[in-house]
Amino acid sequence: MMSVISHWSLENQERARSILASYPVKRSALMPLLYVASLEHEYASLEAMCEVAELIDITPVQVQSVATFYTMFKREKIGDYLISVCTSISCHLNGADEVLAAVEEASGVASGETTDDGSVSVEHVECIGACGGAPAVQVNYELIEGITLDKAEALIDWLRDTKPTVLLADEMQQLFGGQRSFDWGSTEPQGATRPVPAFGPYGSTNGSARGGR
Image 1 (cartoon, helix red, strand yellow):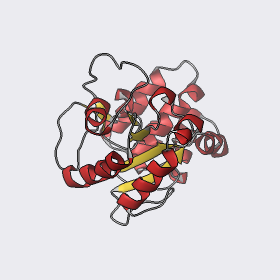
Image 2 (spheres, one colour):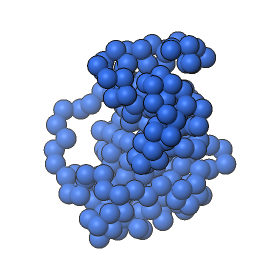
Image 3 (spheres, one colour):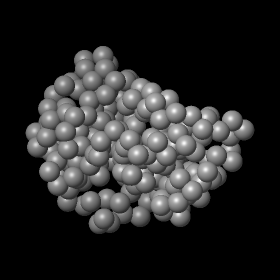
Image 4 (cartoon, helix red, strand yellow):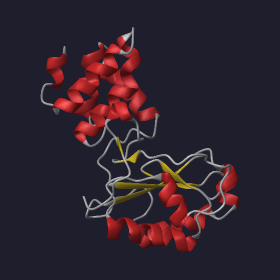
């Protein structure tokens, strides 16, 4: 069965084996495996969905039904940095539409699009659970609360100029954020390395070292 992913990197093959071993029922591993497949293929491509389906003995349509329901599974290639601007009610009332417009202007692309150089994708999203810190954005799912128009523009410039290999929510909050929903507590040393939620078993997280890609 693992032969279906024999062309994956050795690291991702091992991640897939480990994830499968964690679930008594194979189909329960669908979402974690789909993230790993997305990392391997750079998005949840049709090929990636078919491979996951074969790994857990379900149909590609069943995998597709999950991939199309959850917006965090991208079905086309996106940029290195995914900027997600919350436009739900609390953020909307606190200027999220203007923040989104600032991000679009600074990046040069509209929501739902990716820059020609593949560096930045922009999207607007529903509630990301930071209503007390509205308006809120995420960069590769790392949170920034209380962002302003000027800071939204500065964020895009910072991503392009520094090209960080690891995105840390605490660092970006300090640089570009404002009011928080609550005290975040201790500093998190791990951050996102790809436009996928930072989670060790996916291979999408790393330490605080930064620098060019």
